Image 1: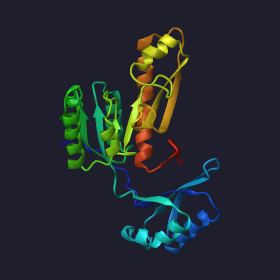
Image 2 (image 1 turned 135 degrees about the vertical axis):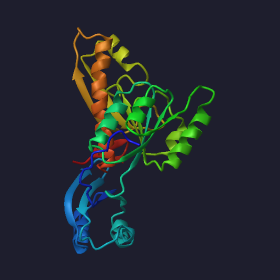
Image 3 (image 1 turned 30 degrees about the vertical axis):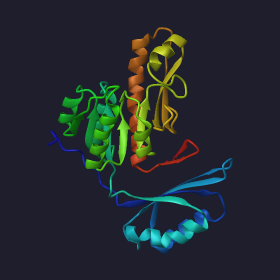
Length: 294
């Protein structure tokens, strides 16, 4: 049981449609007319055209109160428009919050921030599971009332460890995996199982200083800006589509410890934004890039 109640915010009853298709005339009009014909009250609509790739991307959210289609019937009625414009599309419902698993090693600052924001109602999702290869954060998980599972990871047991993790993701019906400073490289099988469902925080302003110990390497290089990057995980280490980045200025007076402290502040902010935008269905991916809708 939680030591406190998670702050409840007014849960919206909305649907969000995410669309990617070749750019052409009439797309917005067709979607708007379709929603109007079924009595939708549009709350937000945003779009982006990528001329280089001839792509059209759109996010539209509407109030389901008074909407004449049931969610299960949406596809049947929307198929004609989707085929006409060769759309890839997803329909997301606010009444079905994502179930999020957090993976962490020893550093707890990102984990603590996510749990605190969830408690305060900033992250509208369910967080039923924390997995770690260390026991350092077990007490924190218990404080927030989240199930904690310790799974030791060594060079010679990685397939077995990941099999245990997969079983837990299935048991808890997980939709999104957040690597909150989980200091293990995921196997290609792991990444392939959860495409576009794994968000990582890298303690560097990618693509600079990929891999381990980026703050030490930045210090040795004498950089004047440090940063953090939230990105989706792909099979290529630290090269997945970038969701959010932030930076802080440093000087010759800053030592490695100062870079690490400033970096941790950035990591918390960047990761929480990346997770929030994902659970609010504000991200579309294409060509190893992301579009973040307001």
